[in-house]
Length: 160
Length: 160
DNA sequence: CTCCTTCACTTGCCTTGACAAGTATTTTCA
DNA sequence: TGAAAATACTTGTCAAGGCAAGTGAAGGAG
Image (cartoon, rainbow over all chains, first blue to last red; front, side, top):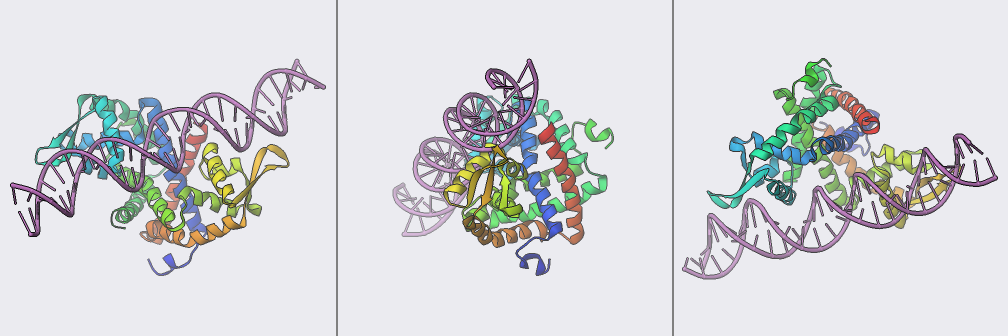
């Protein structure tokens, strides 16, 4: 992480290849996930993530602000998704008894059922697109590198 | 790439970590790039990519359909961006003499100037967020893994 | 106790992007 | 040769998401 890393205003050839591949992945991968979920389950990748995160929480219940953070979402975006989910009885909302400013969201039975229905094909798609092309060693390396980048981007998003 | 890879309907713990990091990167990284470019240059990451791809082409000229493909874009999306660019004299459009169905886009001087102005801070941001956190070996591994995933996703997008 | 600030969430306006239909040009084939 | 199909791009319509302003609740100063 010396000076050279940020000094030259251009990327060298090897960096260009990495960068182009990363651009393709960050653009085309979410689109591919959205297509599969939209086709098979009628929900977006983001909506799936909201259901999945809620399902993993204690009592299947979270504060909306926490849910927004783990879903990499803004509050207005999550708010509108929760409107749709509540209309379909996939979740319930109620004020947090311990602090009326917070809102607690709980995954309802119909929402859990939707998630369980959607999961197998979605997980299979993730494995096809991300895990199957890689060896076990490549997966380890990829995980390590992405974890570092994700941490850096998170710092930038929150603090910067 | 044995049966186990696609058979079980769930991800194991190591896969979960990789997957969560990848989700963060594909969502938060484009957002961080957009913020920087919007703030410093008044353009989106996608618009920067269009200018950059055009600038690298022979004679700074490409068919719109080719440009859309290398930018991972649909045709309507690119069409509207070209409307804005043409209004600012950043590009010119004309029918391809060899086949009037194609449209050739050429980067104009003002467009190249905008790109050159915007590039240093943008490239620095890319280096900060993506390259600086990694060792040289990690960069090689990441590039190899992403190239494989990108190829798989591209096949899915085009053929599937 | 009252007012002000802070905090969490929601609402309204606007831009962006996707999909489908429309237009213009070239190719195909009877 | 002339109508039909294919190709490349543009336009129209609609939903999704970002930002700023609005609402309601909790803490703090006077």
